[in-house]
Image 1 (cartoon, rainbow over the protein chains, first blue to last red):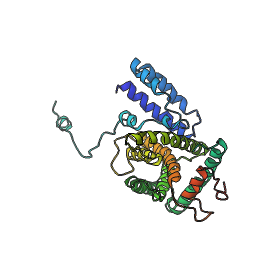
Image 2: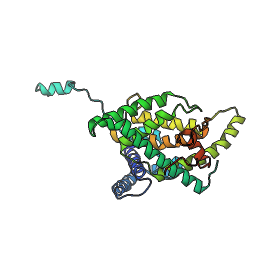
Image 3: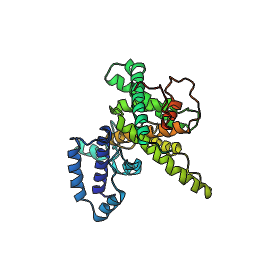
Length: 101
Length: 202
């Protein structure tokens, strides 16, 4: 998945969640998300736009059951959190801290 | 089962009032024992994770064993998301399950011809709920999604969860023992268009 598609899928999820929280009604909060979706759409490749067109709308939670974001897309779209290792110092950090390089 | 629009609206209105009461009861008896703030958040998360695990580890049955864990996970998820399920949520759930039941009745007959068991509506919807709970990181294994993704997955779990509840009720075989009790058998009667008379104050 390209970075642009990843961004677009993430915004689709955000829009769905906003509308779902508002019982399917549009709200002023979604304007910013829709603007960001327009910008993300412009960055998509032609075949990605075609694929999204074929899928149909995915952001209307009160519509057909299939209008929810697909979970398999969710997993690919949303960036996993980087694991944090408290107290761990990488070799590079250790070298830099010691004044090397 | 294709319900008339007026029956669907009536069922959705009664389900909304019923779930508001479920939330009110769980607030008083479970979540309200801790003061609002981090302690209450911890209680809500605890109820959510325990019941999400119970739900996910259980098979779909016809006796209603999933009713308690499902209600507790739905109530705690709504509190965690700070969302109230309104008439629109319930109407969409009732309509979706009504359509899905019809579609699957045809598909199941066709699949039986080739020896394939595709499962009941409740079984198919439970798979969606299970997967969403897993992605939300509340059903045992850690989720690899970021906090926003986990929030979206939890909302999807509630979205599929109320659909599962409707489908599960329709497959429930238990009889209503008390006409004032709004339980799984009451939900089944509502969805079958029986009206479940006198059961809801809403």
